[in-house]
Image 1 (spheres, helix red, strand yellow):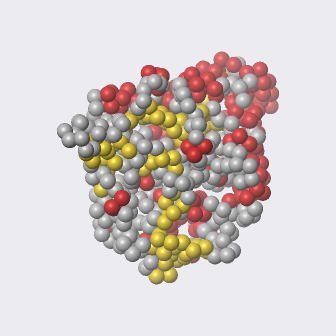
Image 2 (spheres, rainbow, N blue to C red):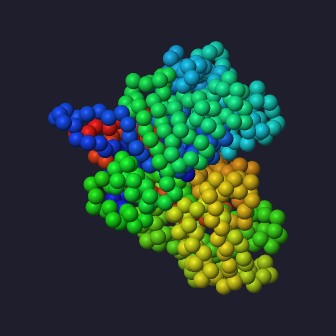
Image 3 (cartoon, rainbow, N blue to C red):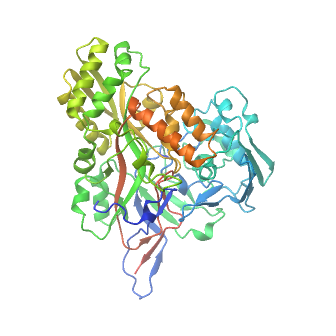
Length: 555
């Protein structure tokens, strides 16, 4: 969630699959068993990408580790297909507008309370309630009345999700949604126990004890933004026989060298590595790679109160000029040294494929000028923009989180843009990620270096958040034609997959032509693991790391 944010480029087509899951055999360390028979170990020590801000799925800003704590109706299996999870079966109406889910008889929360159809209805209503201020409410749009409820125009009781009985959940849609079953694998749609939410009120999700769970593990030894926490096997989990681990100790370090040192000292079995560390381990047999559908980008606050900056940020020539000073290849290959991929537009590589040709959306998106490097053209746009604004220069502050890669990238942008654009001054402001996030969603910034990960394996995961009035559209850019294209592709006229695909391509081109945001690089995870650790699932979208099938065997 935040529950939470090359040598080889995945030669196998199966590893390039994007319908959510890349299953990679991963793994832990321990002493050699005295017998010849491998010993199954029930504890592992792993590093985390991010600290966890809240355990409340209605208020989470992301879902990095959420798959370990919360199950949804469906689960994306290793063949990249949605299969039953908390729902034992699903029935779809002929018109594609009604889904009927049967909840498992043995589905329980971690405290022993039954998970019922009403547990889902309550959870979804709570997330959509405008008082909750969920940044993921837009994912529910298309379910009957969801958008109107989220905008305060209808009561939550009018949501098109009803409990026919304790084990039957009926969901009605305004229009068929092409990717609806994929949505149902995402933790934003997990159930919640109303009794526990009511009991703890505003403290719900703010401590491990003030939360209940529906997934393979429960949380212990955690508080918001703590650097260590523990996953314990959930004794009431419906599929507990599949869970081999009793305890997983997690460790988050802002400084990647600290995490590597713990791995080298055999205090961690698995760790993400960064920068020069990647080069140092290029020949290691314990080195693994995996793309993640997270795009990092620049955002300008186009409704900022400062009149001069507002005019400048709303000038497309100014935005284009800054973008053209940025060499994305240098960022990916030299600055971040293999931890990033050069973007072709806003939508990440290995996410979605053309229904007719199977071509990657990232290879077909046509807004390539939006990520081009052209200093000469940058100067032309810059001078044109300054002339239109009647100014000789521009100064603004770029807000960034204080993680290593973000700081490096912001420093590069600062240097490259100021060097090539006369009269430009960029002041950098590095703050903890939690502060950066809060300032972002409250629009309390001038410009920011931020990003987002795909919730599902579909281009709309990046396109929908850029719609007018979407809470994740932090720069508050707006374009009516773009909104219409995405509305059609997401909710209304989406039955023909090829037509839908082309509408998304047209929408992405508008984004890049207008520089609604300025893409910088796609995340590419590089990590070390012990040869005894197996069964970690690395997802390209949604909840990034899942340990349900993790097991450790010391040979």
